[in-house]
Length: 131
Image (tube, rainbow, N blue to C red; front, side, top):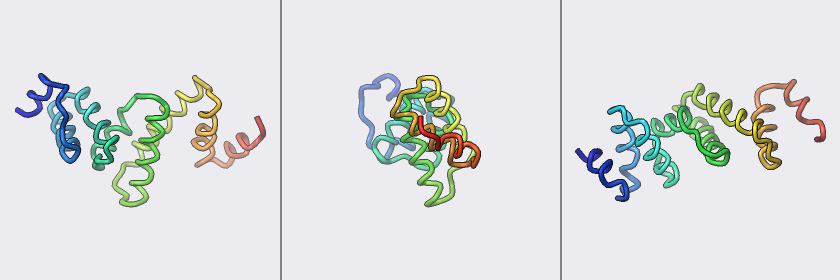
């Protein structure tokens, strides 16, 4: 009921404490677009729970800066609690790496170096050469 009211009146603001709950319900009802929108709103308000953060890591396709922020918070949450699925982190890394390598902006090359070198010694050696 509340979700259908929100769909009809998307300009309404939902309390940040309820954003994760609304996102969970929207996703369980098959409303993926609304779920992603509410999940990102919860993320921006620092109110995203693990399930919502996992959804963002798996499905979000925003700007490189947005994806990088989501990735960093997901890694931090995994270190703190260990409840974020490692495959979700890997998925976001891959999507971000592809986006950065396609656009090749200078400030994003630093992020690409970080993503490539984190797990691979041979990639670390390759990217440690001056550009």
